[in-house]
Length: 182
Ligand code: ADP
Image (cartoon, rainbow, N blue to C red; front, side):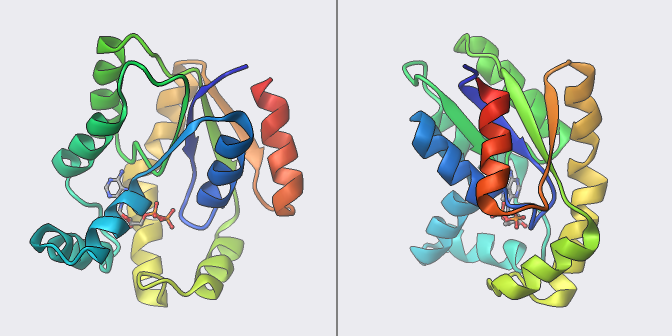
């Protein structure tokens, strides 16, 4: 079974929901950069305040910051992990690759959750997080298309990407993903 995974997809694709379920049932470390950043915001630290401004505009937080967070969590003794929301651009993907080479844990599989724009908007508006108002959502989708979507080709070229349709029920999508992992 593949146990070093990346979940890729637009905001609202259901990465977080699926990542939580799949990591629990397969005993993987779930690393969500969005959750880790939100925890920093919640702590009301000076850094958290700066992060909150960026997140609430829909832009990406600096690569340097996100990389240092991920680096502190991905250590050589991990038995398996699932990255959710990271990498989010080519710079992060390349930095991740060199980090993983150092600890001898290459990515085994990238799961790309595919959902059409109409459903994404609908789900995000229904979710109602601080960065889920319509204007910010539009910017997050734009940032996704410009910066993150090129990773689909990047990992396809490496031969490790598999697509899953993300428009069914939570359980049916989980079943599809689980079938790909074994
Ligand atoms: P969603 O999947 O809905 O986009 P996330 O929780 O993954 O939600 O991300 C929310 C916000 O957190 C992003 O819009 C961005 O500002 C920030 N963020 C999360 N992960 C990263 C990352 N890897 N690099 C830069 N910014 C990030």
